Length: 80
Image 1 (cartoon, one colour):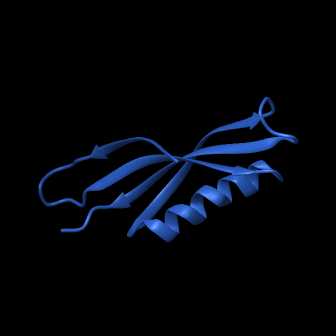
Image 2 (tube, helix red, strand yellow; image 1 turned 180 degrees about the vertical axis):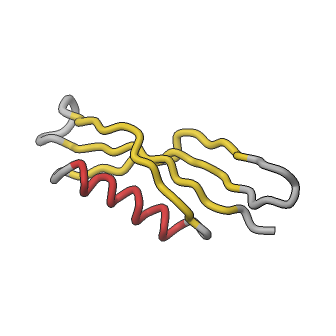
């Protein structure tokens, strides 16, 4: 799930990166939730350069068991 996105610009000769926020989920653990988001980013985006784990949370209200969530920021280099 994409929550927000922003661009990071430097001078005209530098590389340009775009950052998006994803939330991975897992019934198992925070690590598995972060891996879910990272795997999805690598499957669907080109030129992924780094990923930052921003927040961790647990959904308990609308699920049978706990659902671990990891919000990550994904930075990837724009082509062209």
